[in-house]
Image (cartoon, rainbow, N blue to C red; front, side, top):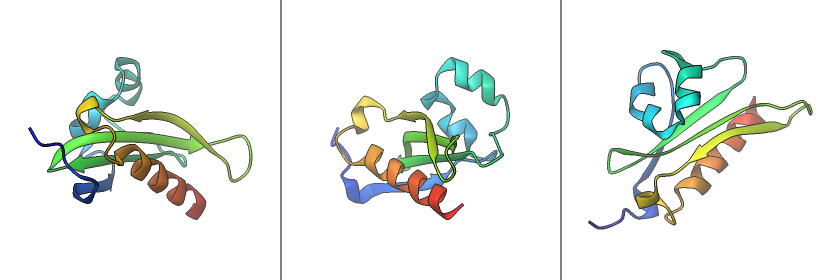
Amino acid sequence: MTRPGAETIEIEPVHLFNLKDYRPLFTARLQAFFGDSVPGGGHLLFGARCGGEPAGAVWGGPDRNPGGLFLFHLYVPERFRRRGVGRRLLETVCAAASEA
């Protein structure tokens, strides 16, 4: 199987309608925390797709420092690593946090 290149990475917000696609990328504990919804209150969840397949997820939220971001979770499956997926997810969540 050919590994996807960085040009095939698509980043999207994770919400109620696509959470089921990204659920396996979170630990069992986080899956239980989410239940059937995603956290609100300034929390930011983004997923990455490569060739239409979920390739990573990031979850960031408010920090105690004003304007700060706390990174709760970042995961990229091994077969998608070293392709820029994690970097793109971090850039996206940081940019969204700075806009909020």
